[in-house]
Length: 210
Length: 130
Image 1: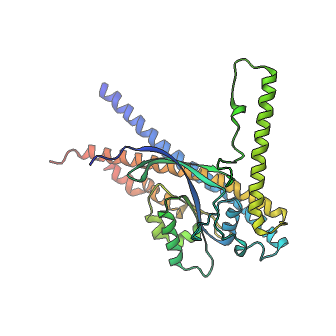
Image 2: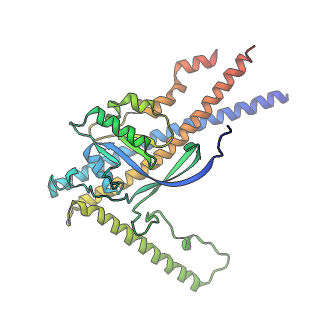
Image 3: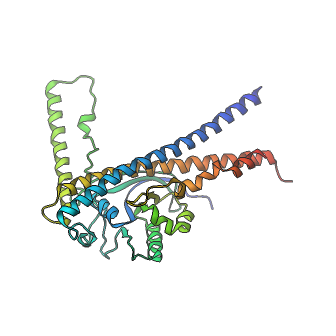
């Protein structure tokens, strides 16, 4: 009876791993499918910008080849062992970090003042918090606009509005791709667990080698 | 020798790109472009004149650089170096195959899905039933 219960628990655990794997594959496929229309919109806006600004202004010839750091990069959290990443690394996108301000200027960041919850609050404190939160949001917003404008300036002083909308489309595409990278990471982790389980099951059925 | 303890680390890293001009230009607009002092970039623009060797060299370079966490590669470009892309199996940098204007994304060719679809193949099911 106890063995049956243990066997049922083991089967339940293995089923859960398989389900996790299948869920992650489904999420990966769904995320990659959602990428296509976003990229398509970006390419379309880029073509429209090229049409209005001229072929030579919106081309690889305009790209900045002077040394500069990426404004948008990834924060990666993982486990290192023997100078290599093991386990399941996770990625988060850090958008529009300026060279002067090393912290991330991403619009997804919410200032800490807006996240605090207090048991008792006074109206004046709330107003002061709200105004501090608004000021910090405005600062972040200004920095993001400045970084975006700096990137667009590679293509000239006056750029087509379509180039700006193309920029936003590709920013959105980046967010989707970072999500896909995280799902890929969990999918490979779930896959290795299921594979290990299958090998353990086969070894258990074959028995010890004399 | 016992394995070293795993240390949780947080680090910043770049996104590399191997794709056509429009795709690379678009992502550069989003601010991912990086050029170091030696004028080495984190992207390769693939056009009709780009050789397979140049693509392979860029892929090998980006997958061995420590400052790159994700490599975006157009799927039609990955198909040109399919053997190399499929033989890559490290967790970082993550390789993401993306569609291009003329070549939509095909899950059947995605290297990571090819790796895991073995679990759904008839061979794996049959071997589990023996």
